[in-house]
Each structure stands twice: as C-alpha cells, then as structure tokens.
Length: 358
Image 1 (cartoon, rainbow, N blue to C red):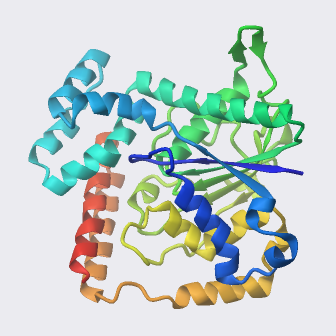
Image 2: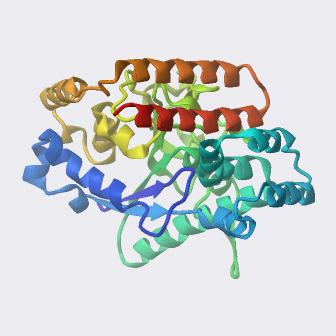
C-alpha cells in the first residue's frame, strides 16, 4: 500500500526547496545507522512518498510589506485590535541578534497565535494542501494511508487544521464535502516533533480535540497513533509541555532521553531526526516494526550517544543554564508574549554559544 507522509514546517523562512534537506536526511538515515531491512526491501522512497506542506506565504505576504518595521507591526496590531505592547517594548531594546531572530522566526509564532486573520489563513492553506494532494493520489488509482510529521510551530498548525477537518465539512462548489470528516477519514500516524501545540493552543484544546490515538476511543479518534518528541533543552517544548493523559494508552508514544546537544540549535528538525530515539519509532510506525531490529536499535543508540557534545564545556554549561533560566521565567507567566520574548532569547543564546565555542 502506498504511504503518504506530509511534512509541515515550523517557524522561520522557508523557500520552495525547504524540505529537500530533511527528506534527503530521512532517506540517508538507514544507511548511516546500518538498518539492513532497507537493503533487502528497498530504500525509504520505495515505501514512503514525502510531501512537503508550506504555509510560509501567510507570513511573508505581510513581512515583505513591513520590511522588519516595528511601526508597521504596531499598525497592523492596532487595525486588528490585538495588543502586543510587551513585544514591541522588547523590540525597542533588543540586541541586533534578538531583532534578527524575532523577524526571521518568532514573529511567525506571534502572528499565528494572536492574529485571527493570519491564523485562519494558515489553517486554510494547510487544509487545502492536504485535501488536494490526497485527492490527486486517489484519483491516480492509489490506495493511500496517510501520516503527517510536523515540526515546531507546524505542530500547532497541524493540530488546529486537522481538528477543523475532522469536525467540519469542506465547502466545494458542489456542496459540503464530508469525506475528510471524523468517521470517514483517519490519519495513520501523527508525528509531532518539537511539539508546541499545548502552549499555543486555542479552541479546541489539544487534549479535548479529535487529534488523539485510537486507544482513547476509535470512534472519536482522527489518528491511529500519536508520537510526541521534545528535547530537554528546547525551550519551546518545555514551557507548558505537551503531556498526554494515561487514557491515551499504547496509541501514544513519547520517547524519553532526548537531551543530547550535538548542535546548539536544539530546536532544529534535522537534529531531532538524527537521534535514534526520534527516527526509529518514526520509521517503525510509518513502515513496519521490523525495519529496525532491537540489536540495531541498541547499536544505533550506542553510536549516537558516543558522539561528543561540543567540547567547549564552559559555553555548554552556560547555554544549559541560560535555557533553564528562560524556561523557568516563561513557565511562570500566563502572557504568551513572555514566551515569544523567551524564545527569541533562547535562539540568541544558541547563537552566542555556537560563536563562543570555537
């Protein structure tokens, strides 16, 4: 059976080729770690068709007009009736690096979460991309099982979009289309990498939506399985982290021990995927449990864990301390703008540590 894997990006600037490095990385992982099933049964691309989904244009259409102008952002906020005074005050005193990270990445999160007109546009873009590609595949005669892997801001976008698809018919010229609604359609697996859907949640909340595994209740589940990944020093995932209730049972998996720092930008999707704790359950649940044997898993973990972290120990310790402080500060606040500011500072801390570690 052909397998379709939608890949949804996170915050930041994404051109038309944004997913190429990630897809190439996924294809290369079996040979890098010696997973012999692929030698006998063909490479990843024989079993999975990776389909990138980008919603970046929802942000660039605005940001290209503003040219990183806080005044333009303030005017837009005023027009939309959204209060972002704390973020604007932060920008006034921000360093050059903090301003750069805000405008290239964090502003996406702010716009998606606080501006309903942007939120709706993003969700509509992703919904249309999923529906159009699935419809094209089935029209070509394929019987497809569908999974989705989202990263960073994309985890929130994915949860919210699928919640809409599960509960509301799609309006077409021929009338309401209910074929993607709960009961008529189901994703095989949802892989939430660097999951921020809880801290950014709106309505429905992430633990009361249909985006839960079949082990809760098959009749109300929009996916058979749900995998969640978060890194110990990834601030975005550690402030109000996603935690599934016990009732989700075996349909939910969250591997423990994702905490190594092989690059200071621990939020990076490819760094997550490099860790066997992340890519092995994805490969197993996407294709077949046999794709990685227990012995191969043990060898992969040994090889990965033997790879050295940056050898500038002082900068590494300082980075961890800065992230812990930022997590603590952001976790005590109920104001999302404090999260956006902390996220900007965390990205700056990663850059500072990398530059100092020479």
